[in-house]
Length: 368
Image (cartoon, rainbow, N blue to C red):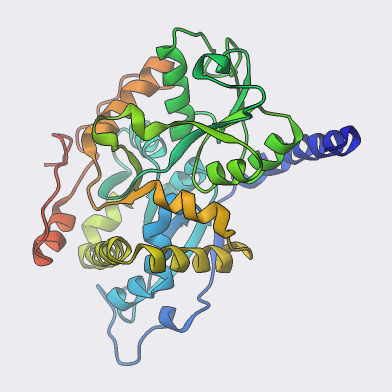
């Protein structure tokens, strides 16, 4: 790339950062029904007398369960005449804020925002009611600048946001190498650059960063820009499994409308079953949803490797949530939390039993 073009691209990336920060301060963007499967079926009845259930998710492949369940009309099918309304988020804190305010009832979200939201509210605002996905996070680097893991020292590596799930994971990995970084400023033996996933590929292409620890599909977008996968985070976990996406609900909504929550969980379990039985069709379905939500589908060279690295599961992998909380404490981003009560898997296990599937465990962190 010519030097002048690279410089312009770098300035464009830097100029975009304040705008993205401002955008993240609001709630998610509203999303309206745009396919026949999302329409309320004639003759169906409302659940719990509710006119709507407000569902939040990210436009990430790690939220593939929600993408597929929506695109296939599964949420609306299970909710009957109770309308499924949607909001799409770019960052966990804004989704937690929406949950706390009642702007959404149920949401797909990463473990770190769930932990932070729960602890800041002294355990009064949310419950994790199910799992959704594992994996799908990679350290992708510029192979001309970084040829081995030890070469990461002294380089500029992006994470999506201060204190988000990938940020915590990267800070923990840095500490395991014996390197020092101030968690809040990102300065130290490695420069941790907090960059919105939407502009990380441009930041990489311009040379503003040397790599990134990011979820899919951002990781595969970087590979398409010439990056190399240096480390798959799954390799750092027992059995290569760790929670990347949970399902959370407002506690008041769970108490007042358990039938509606169960309906959403039925749709989620059905979606995961279909995804795992039909991976190629599910991949295409998720991509259609991404295109409808963002106006642009992912190219084959990005979605194919990205989809393969994600495991869709109903299991919230509760023991790994506790470990991720310990990582945040070690990084200095979180005081030692009391996570007892963060899970309520009662309705999920009822749904799983009804499907003849194995129930899941809360690792001793259940509400009862």
